[in-house]
Amino acid sequence: MAIATLLGAEEWGVATAALVVEGCIMMRKCHLNTCPVGVATQDPELRKRFTGDADHVVNFFKFITEELREIMAEMGFRTINEMVGQVDCLESRHNLNHWKYSKLDLSPILYRQPADEETGLYNLEAQDHGMADILDWKLLEVAQPALQHQQKVTGSFSINNTDRTAGTLLSNEISLRYKSVGLPADTIHFKFTGTAGQSFGAFNTNGVTLELEGDANDYFGKGLSGARLVVYPSQHAGFVPEENIIIGNVAFYGATSGQAYIRGKAGERFAVRNSGVNAVVEGVGDHGCEYMTGGRVVILGDTGRNFAAGMSGGIAYVYDVKGTFDQLCNKEMVDLDGVSEDDVAELKTMIEAHFTYTQSSVANFVLNDFDNQLKNFIKVFPRDYKKVLFEMKVRQTENAAK
Image 1: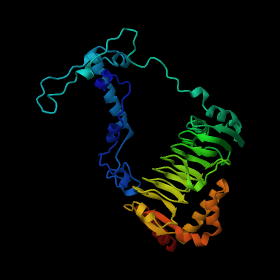
Image 2 (image 1 turned 45 degrees about the horizontal axis):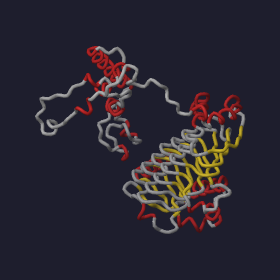
Image 3 (image 1 turned 180 degrees about the horizontal axis):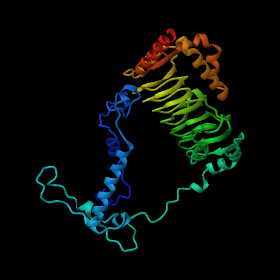
Image 4 (image 1 turned 120 degrees about the horizontal axis):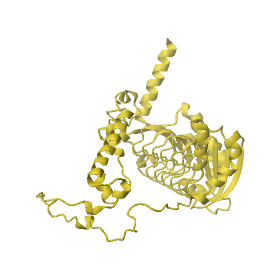
């Protein structure tokens, strides 16, 4: 860290080291749900092996800072800011005979550009991120009755692609006041018209419904935490929704809970690392449901290749009219089953909600011929998840028998 600072660093990343302190042994099997030390797994037996302690991480950071202070004192620096960019305090070793190192010329890295005393070597000016004019301040203003008294509020707003993370500040305020419980369902219902920027609805929490008439960029619903997101094309659009992409790549990345209804297709890596959101969409690109660990996804259309790679939990229902899904799915960790009687009610309810919120013509067609169309749905079922559910059912049966 001292060397990095002298080379110009003002921040350091030590997350991997902190993870090792907690017990990680870098097996690089996080996506397989088989972590042997119980760090990255949902298997209760494996989680019993976790021996990490928060105090270990605290001590680790104490050791880092103490040693850094010792180095700074040895070199005569009182603060990190004094130390940043003082590259002339470094020198390269010249007694290295190893063939990989002996010919290295580090002089370009260790060169210090001549500059007067008024030239700053560290961050001296606050960067203007344009936060003063973001859309969320308007949302917060309109949402005050809901925030203060939990009264229902609605509002309509125009949105464009420079309006990123719409709703995130609003949900932050809700979480500050009401913690993870959030607000009652549909307390806040905002409708947007236009093209949303990246991360529309990111991290939005319980009690919020964001409705978008238009389209959205990448990371739609990233980290969604209980809100409902609805998107459908403009009423003036001249294209067929189910044949066109309406939201970008990596939608619902790391989402934990909530609902989403998308009238149109999504880009690549739809619902990657989703752990609890229920979503309906009318087609996805490559790597759909990658590393998914929970939630339910209904895809009323085509998928790209490598679907369900690393998927260890949750369930996806794919409407495979063309019969091509078997070749597009990564079956390393999942089984492709038919829709069982136990699944019918859940699947139909999700499609009905999709039609209610988006007036989808695909949903309307499927619902009007539901019993016949069931044969075209494939249930993507992770094997480990299936095993856990089966064992739970057996235990429940045994307990009932007692």
